[in-house]
Image 1 (cartoon, helix red, strand yellow):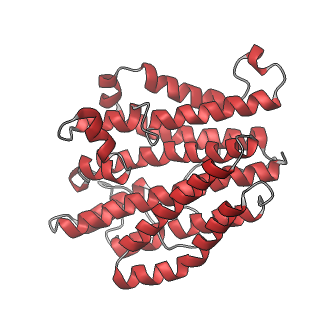
Image 2 (cartoon, one colour):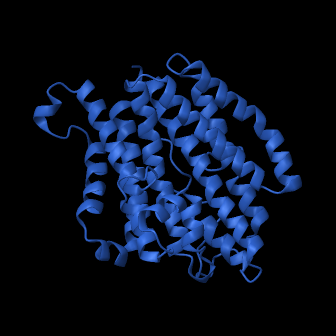
Length: 325
């Protein structure tokens, strides 16, 4: 497969997943502000901008450089409506559609049509969000993202095209699930409840069916990090990314099965998965803030390694706040 097409597929997976997860995070954020009048809106908004790596966030809570004027309007402008930023919902979906234009020969017509319809509907959805509130936009993005990946599962052969798409989705999901957990762990008094965090990841009902009880903080964190059967957990996403990389290396490296792990990206993802698998749960939860930051760095480093290994020699596309190298 041409490296240009492979790269487009990889970034379609990342961008669609990024839009989906950002919509989930913002939905929880705005819902909390409506339901709890005692929340310090400026503090909660500043924390969210910092945790999401927005360039509009100068600092983080507890530092003098935190911008006091952060509010919901500014959060939505930066993380939902900014067309120039691939870290926003609108920017990510627009970028996914542009990448799909360059990979139409390997995408099914249904996937291209879904991305194109989604992109063309964004101006109307933005107008409705400004007039009636943003929740309709968030629901629209979740539904359209699920449609794109559902069509990929139903209409794409399980060849290199599908592997690059799912690899991108999996690495982005590791990063975004870690950020969702960070909104609870690092935000102090302005943090959302664990119930809201579980709902934002679509994990609330699976959690209740698994533990059959009220939401417990340790069990909720454990579920989102370590559950092997829930597809949005960090462990399940790392395992999926590792499987994709193993298949891609097997198809591109002769005798890959004899020489072990062939690529740096596979090593990076494998180390992160092994850390989660073999570290005791109490130790993992005790070091949770540091581990969440490490998982976000893992996603960035693995993405750079995938770019270096499989795509053309150029700087990888990254989040605005990620540091090269």
